[in-house]
Length: 304
Ligand code: FAD
Ligand code: NAP
Image 1 (cartoon, rainbow, N blue to C red):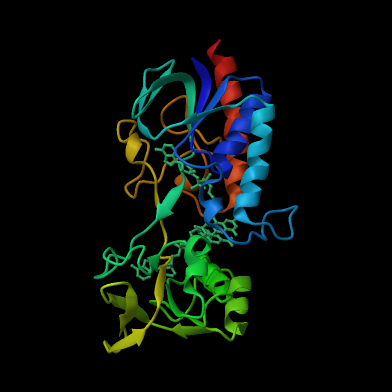
Image 2: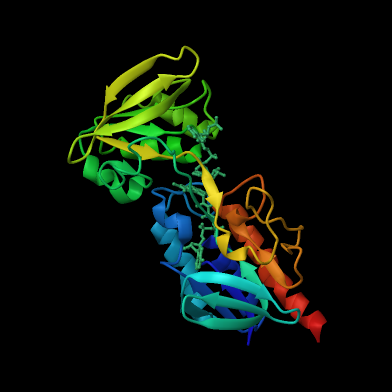
């Protein structure tokens, strides 16, 4: 029986593990991939205090290292179900079942699809959701980035080191991204904008992406553009499909918690991007993790 089982080892889960383990609890962290979560897909992080600039994979390893020191048990698995049996919870992966007094859900969010013609057909053949992973394959090409948030603008800037040009297509005439990123993008000579427009179709040949059909949502006008690749950043969806039995998510799937990261089920906490919250960042994820890591300690003390 674990004192706490944490699902997901992004920044929220790793911080929760650190705080719980330093309170001498028996902690397991279940992860389906490499530690770090979305940070592994991030080129440059310059808004995490203490670092001028650090890559996502580097920061992931820095957060992971202390978990070994405090004897957090790393478990590989894809969690399929979480059940509440009152005093204990049961977490099931594809082939194992684990019991714990408390569970901390830190499963984060994943990218949304654009759902247009050609997107699925050309995924991994010119359509990408990760500039850090795929950017270097597009040297000297004209690229399209879809979206107007932090991810789209930040990754468009990153892509300019490889690409000939990067065009951002956004459905409105103002960006959602932070001001500092907007200023950088506007000042970058390689970045162009197509405003008030959406992608109607991603086009290609037998081998890969060759362009996109873009529609101006104000005039209704359609135009064809040549691109060697299309990077899609149109937002995130919560990863909560394994929690249906618990009934702790709102209509959109985000988990609702109180200020102590407690969900509506006693002993089940949620942290990081998977929560209903205003600001989804590494700093807010680690803040949530610290609160829940400490919260499970008090919860278990009160059980005695
Ligand atoms: P995640 O990082 O999403 O981690 C969740 C983990 O849970 C993953 O490792 C996943 O594999 C695991 N998991 C999910 N489901 C299961 C399951 N069923 N079983 C087992 N494991 C599971 N924020 C900043 O502050 N600064 C930045 O510069 C920045 N840049 C970004 C750039 C991009 C392109 C993106 C997409 C995001 C960026 N962010 C940035 C946001 C930041 O990465 C997230 O806010 C943060 O990673 C959220 O942490 P988390 O621990 O809540 O979730
Ligand atoms: P986001 O903030 O939700 O932005 C999504 C963007 O895509 C918006 O501009 C939205 O347009 C557009 N969009 C949504 N659906 C669309 C569709 N079907 N067709 C065309 N455009 C569509 O998502 P994100 O940029 O991925 O950011 C996710 C979270 O991670 C945010 O909390 C963000 O702050 C954080 N993050 C932080 C950093 C950083 O701090 N440096 C970097 C990356 C991400 P509208 O604007 O019209 O809604």
